[in-house]
Amino acid sequence: TAPAQDIYIIDTLSANLDWTTMKMIHSSHDMQLIDLGNGVMKFNFPGIWLPDSTSNEPLSHGDLTYQIKEKATNGLGSEILNTAHIYFDWNPAIVTNTTYNVNSVLSVKENQLSKVEMYPNPFMGLINVSSSKIIDEILITDLMGKEIYKSKVDNYQIQLDLSNTVSGVYLVRIKSNNETSTKRIVKK
Image 1 (tube, rainbow, N blue to C red):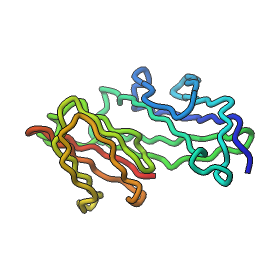
Image 2 (image 1 turned 180 degrees about the vertical axis):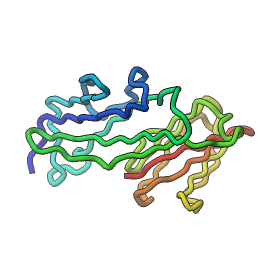
Image 3 (image 1 turned 90 degrees about the vertical axis):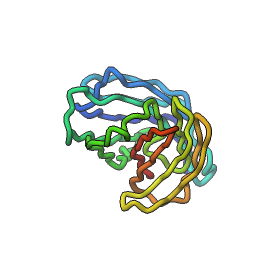
């Protein structure tokens, strides 16, 4: 029931990631990124004074997004897991859900559309999709193939409101001209 004065996140990156390619995309508040070595990153929010959710629920949220490439030497079936620990002032860590990614094969046609980005991932409600080519259509399905969202776009980027979807893993298929890209997203 008190504001968080200082917040930091400790994230130990998978050994299957190329740590030198890490790039910050977005942070909801001023933040310092500190490389602690051996793939351990500290996202530091000193003096954030984040209100508690009972006094100001909308302003009690914060987020950050980064991108990082996997190692070029990873083969099929390579697994990338990630769990972060969030510290509010002097309290014990809140441990995030573990994200799990495994390399699999997409058809050649699926790999043709390049430069597609989606963030944040995992997401809570809104997700941003951008492409180097004009997006014609977006289709989102659950892992059972059930259609969750479908829309014609005709733009390089779009923001989707998926706040009404349940937590879980979804597949996003982006079509541009005669090319397609499929990405996996996770709803918290």
